[in-house]
Image 1 (tube, rainbow, N blue to C red):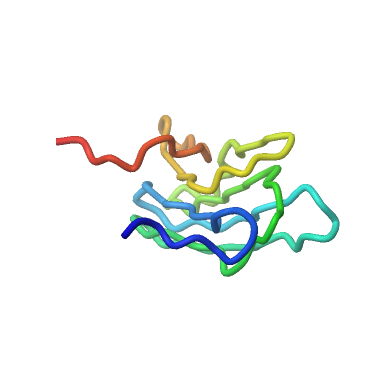
Image 2: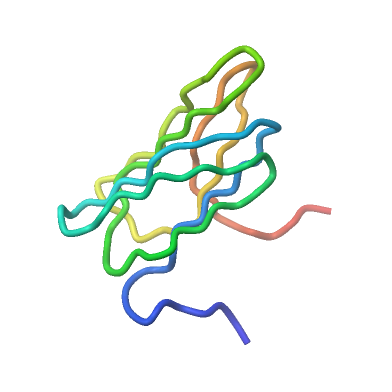
Length: 108
């Protein structure tokens, strides 16, 4: 078994929204030959890009829609990464961050 890989290029970007609020944002890629992705993800859901190819990722932004209003999360930034798994997390009252997921193992 194992994970299915795209025909060519890097794994598709996935963003898990671990907050109790809906969020939206943008995935930006390093090359002008690559189209940026806009996304919207419900609470406790995962958004998956439909394509990526050989595009290195440089930034992921997120706007979290809370009862207190829309809050800009601290974005994930890189000079160019092939990583594909990310999450929107809450780090404090009305404070959010986009971060790379380093393990998908569940804690018991």
